[in-house]
Amino acid sequence: MTRRNHDAKKPHKDLNDRWGKLLPPDVPADKTISRKSGSGRPPQTSSDFSNALSDREKPAAQSLSRRRSMTDSFAQWFKDLPEYRVAFADDVNSPSPLNFRLQEKLGEGGMGAVYAGVQSSIGRNIAVKFLKPELLEDQAAARHFIFEGQITGRLDHPNILPVIDIGRTQNGDLFIAMKRITGSRWDQTFMQKRPRENLDIFLRACDAIAYAHSRGIIHRDLKPENVMLGEFGEIIITDWGLAVALDTVRDQSCAEQLQAGTPAYMAPEVARCEFAAISERTDVYLLGATLFEVWTGKAPHTGKDVYACLEAAAGNVIQSVDKVDEIVEIAHRAMATDPAARYSSVLELQKAVQEYLQHSESLSLTHSARAEYEKPGNSYSDLSRALALFEEALKLWNENPEARRGVSQTRLRFAAAALARRDLNLGESLLLPDNPEHQEVLQKIREAQVVRKNRIRRLQDVSFVFMGFAVSVFFIILNIKSTLESERDIANASFQALRFEKSALLSERDDALNQLASEREHLLRPFFQTLQPR
Image (cartoon, rainbow, N blue to C red; front, top):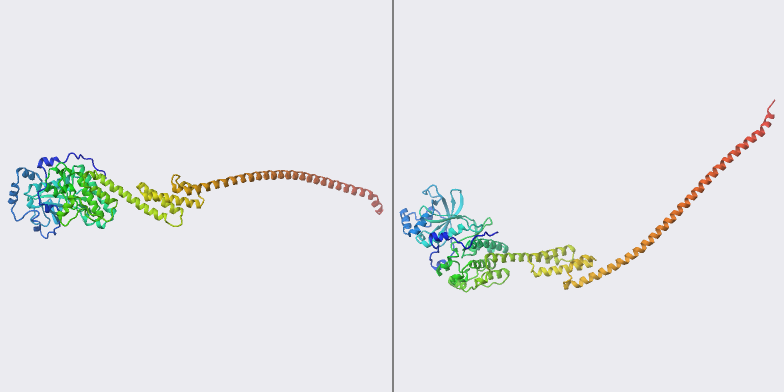
């Protein structure tokens, strides 16, 4: 996801100029250190909402007098907020038309309660957060509440909860209307998710925080509880109530600083009230703490009570884990005691996790390659797949030692199989001349190639002799054939001459016989004449 280029040097001074420094209210440490959102029961009637939205038993004049008790500047700021008509959907006495129709309570925290609702104009399901009525007289609390909405509303990012509007009800109660996300909190589900799923969620959370930093805002209360997982794949960073502009954070008191977070995840500079050290790297610490918990199942800091946990945070005492892998090392670096030793930015932390994912995929490919390599038979197809998988693993992570070793071993075994099958050129192409492990088989292949070349040369010599002999025989046969054909022609001529001579002799015989017959007739004619009767 591409981070938008915003000027981090220009936080929202218009808010500070108009309303003064927007600081959180002074709340007892034991109430704010353990900040956890609760959940209330759904209201059975509209009267269940009376304490959170407004006190319906009090007249409207009382609400007005409450606002008049504020300072003039704050009263003017309050007056400038847009006024909306808000009530429960089933309230028959509600003014009409309503801008927001409220439904059941979704949860309740130290400063306010959240209700499901509907934006009447477009029928959109929303969530509406109200400042508790008793805190309306506390200017700091009211400013803090509105500042949360302003910060969230100005952080236009897919992984930050969209704020629809900020305003006051017809009874003077402050509220923030937000997009309603249905799903579950990350702290409730990360134990059931696959490691890769948790890392994907973490990377998207990093996108949101990196964007906030580009806008000069730090969150200060990052933890799995404040990551909402929507049922349609949304990853939303919530609870920006402790977020603050970087140029105002150093002006806060120690009590205010200790409000800004949860001891189980708190950065040591916050726990120690070292204001000068608080920066974007404080959020880097919190992201590292979040990563640590979703990967190991343990929050970084622990103690028998909240103050012991706070003491652990101040000393940066991190819980030990049974197995330290690359992700745990990344989390530990993000949670370094010295902010300068942490990742310089959220994006750098994100890159480290992304590189781990490449490493993990590389290791997975290596495991698959090893299974192909260890198949019996040393077939060409098995060894080809193993080599391809090992090489792909190296592309993803060039420093993968197992993949590098697997490439060398597979090439060697493949070449040995090729040598056994006398595929010498294939075997030679698989081996690396500068690899000592390949030298023995490479030498055998080259020796076999020399033997094969000599054999081929001998065969060529024999073939040349055979060809010469064959040519000689061919010419001999050709000569014999020519001679036979010549003798045949002579014989045919002699035969024709004999036939002619025979024909001539027969003709002479016939002539002689004819002449003899004529002479015989001539001689006997007088005799036959004498025999005739007179």
